Image (tube, rainbow, N blue to C red; front, side, top):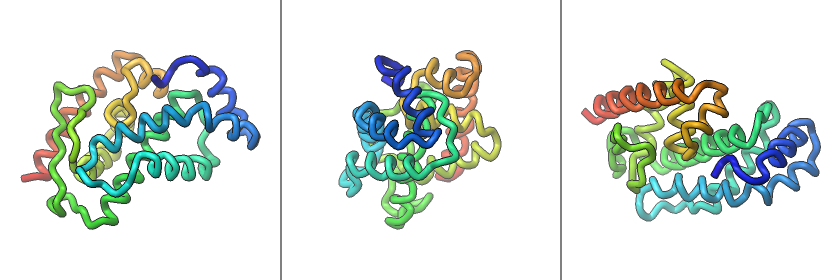
Length: 192
């Protein structure tokens, strides 16, 4: 769960870390590690069978990239995990592209992004095609793309997404519905 016990402590440590306190980072790591592993497992569950990258390696790579990010003004725990999930998606997409998977082929299966699903659990989806569609959505409407990233990839609830984006729950629900329809259309067009 993104918001739970220790949420205030994690937010304080994130703010202290942003301010340059390296001791805060050392205290933060054990508090967020389990949640990052959960996010990584969620991302990996959508990958093809036999993927050579493991959840632990995904967590480690995401943490290395998070540590290098100095310009992020961490708002709270939900914001941190949303950014972590985004980084994990980026790592997996970069990995897939480096292995020669292309939007139309390369042995990848097409994404099943059923409008009725809040979060899919089907493995073996084409992350590259979804990433391309999500990037196109971001160019068109950045907030809707963020809603998809937080809900689909990060597993955040509607309420957690609303909190992280500083919008209402109704806005998140509306963005989620429209983004899913837009992405479905894009994915259908790319597979045609």
